[in-house]
Image: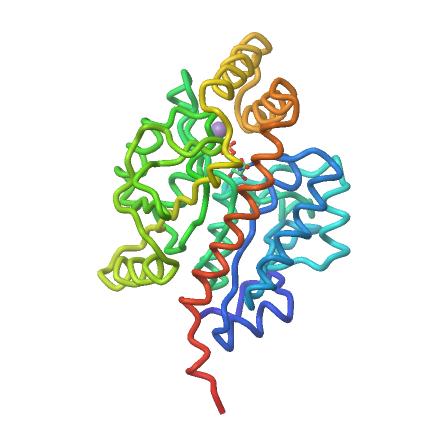
Amino acid sequence: MNLHLPSVYKILPDVALALSKGTGVVALESAVITHGLPRPVNRELADELEIIIRENGITPATMALIDGKISVGITRDELIALANNEQTVKVSSRMIGIAVAQNLSGGTTVAATLVAAHTAGIQVFATGGIGGVHRGQAFDISADLDELARRPVIVVCAGAKAILDLPATLEALETRGVPVLGYQTEDFPAFYSRSSGLKVDMSIDSPEQAAQIARAHWEAGNHSAVLVCNPLPEDKALDPQKINQAIEKAISEAETRGISGSALTPFLLEKVGKISKGESLQANLTLLKNNARLAARIAACMAKPHLHTY
Ligand code: PSU
Ligand code: MN
């Protein structure tokens, strides 16, 4: 474990303690706070995710860029300031150095969060949905996929965001050597709905199984992430047909307006929210909390506090 982090990093004392004692840490991304959710639910949600993780006996580490420091865990004041700030940058892996050099604050995407989590020695990370290959824009491939290929971290998600080309995204994960596990499901979830019609590599029944598979994956010599897909519960999932109509509308509007690059995902999420009259937002919040809970349970299985009994 590398607790002597490079000077571009800053780590919260309780996160450093949990890492050195091996009691379990879950990393959280912050692009969802700065660019994925509307204010003020973004801050409420960010708070709730940390509370859920703590309730499960695990230390949360919300990752973010704060005044040019890559922050492994942020204070409540920093979290509030980040959530309220409308001028933050969306920090993907390629943007980390640029943000540091300019003393910027911003939300880290799955890609950037993976870089920081791996460097800090955090093995479990919860997010909503990973980025992937955009529909109709086969060249717009999220950097999330390439970081998943080289960061040995368990990533708990509700699949890839439904605004994406899911078959192409699943293929890209296969190419990059990322095992895709389904938590109590055989199906690759479609974020807002429980199934994309595509299959995962294996269905698992328990958090222990996720931990066991990840350990074997890394002990074998792999360096890639392990994706744990956690579908929304039946009663909270949205009707795939209905939500797909909203997504298609949003995509065609993005095309008309010429929206692309890193602005595309936030634009689509917001549009789908408006078209679905908030239904997609509710589902998004529920799945984020659901994933934080499962990630904490997996982190408990990865924790090795017995090494530190006195
Ligand atoms: N999942 C959500 N909301 C989000 C995102 C994921 O529920 O806002 C963010 C994540 O941070 C993810 C990013 O890494 O969108 C992907 O953006 P892009 O497609 O530009 O790589
Ligand atoms: Mn992109």
